[in-house]
Image (cartoon, rainbow, N blue to C red; front, side, top):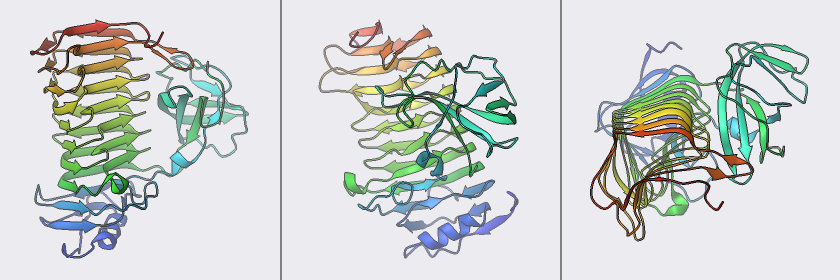
Length: 388
């Protein structure tokens, strides 16, 4: 279905609208929702590429009644792209990959791979307990156990960790059900506080290509308001993610743009880039509320800019941290304003390496032009290895 086609949801906005909303979204194209409250009781999955979920402004509200009986991507988030890839194990890559390489060798047969298939390459660290480096590549051709890719690798994968499928080491997964060109525009999501067992993520962008979130406000208790994992080309503009205890998180996501957004959490970090997120532009955002940590860039985050962001006062019962950049490479942190931190040892910006199975270094991290309000005991801290 073409993206220019328009579907009007026939929801009544009074009863459980889940089936009607899912049916409208399943038709694809531009799905328009009028200014009313839509009651959802189950996750809405966007399965078709070129789908736009279009509201009429802040009076278009999707209110989610979270269930205490959770199943991944079925009732633990409001909107999501398919999570199928998360249920598969990576396949082993035989050797290291250097920047500029145009092929890699696998260990097992590759008969299912076809030209133009997308693969997600990941390196997992068992000590961190997750991915620490990731990127997408597209198959050009396959010869025996060698995969040739259409564009040179832009990330190096050293292949230095022990291979334990799904727990450690360098591998790849084929994106079987690719969903691309998804847009979320001009509406609000509300997930009321129903306790931690009934929490639900607001929008989950999972293993998707080319996703846009614009002018969307999410208020979600006890779960991530905005979340991505294993995705590529995600752009969020003019949007808000608010909650009480779980941060807005962008994990193992490449080509990420966050611009002109507001993030806030009452009792957690406001914003997190982690687990190998790379090639990012985070600029002009407002982290207006956080606790202990305003923003973190942790575990293999690399090649990006964090510029001209406003970080409001960071509350803490002990010591606050404005920005943590641990195990971070080739990142510019500049021209940000950090309003202040609570606690007798509060640190504005901390840059350190991190010890996993192997050391995840912090190198080429540029700090310039950042300004600090009252309460920071240390404007900058450059350390070595936590625990090392």
